[in-house]
Length: 189
Image (cartoon, rainbow, N blue to C red):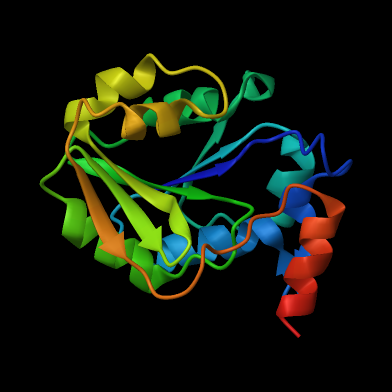
């Protein structure tokens, strides 16, 4: 399991990893979901505000990777995380730190549904979204990605079969702006 929490939160204006959600930092929610899943390894990529994030988040036994290239996009965090993936793993699930509505159940179901295919996605009522599955057979493709939308380009390329897990409900909201955060908090009331 790889959790992306390295962003600089430029649109928000403060570290979104540290925004309070259910009495803990937003990133902690994703880390807790990853640990609760059936994943045998949890890797968390951090970058923006790394010292503060390390202090505020309990990573447990997760491998924490400092992505010094975090300003170049999510792909750099994935590449950083792949450097420490256990060689016995068949692949990994990718989660976002700013999408607290992703559940352990969907993570585990995706891993089971997509295990034998190169790619896996969650299909919600309103579209495809995280978490994603990447089999070891596409690690070379992942290593060549750049920017924020690299994984989407790989998924949509048609070069590899993509398993789809049907998930109830709409795409879990993510937090990119202060308005997103306020909507998240309001929806949780």
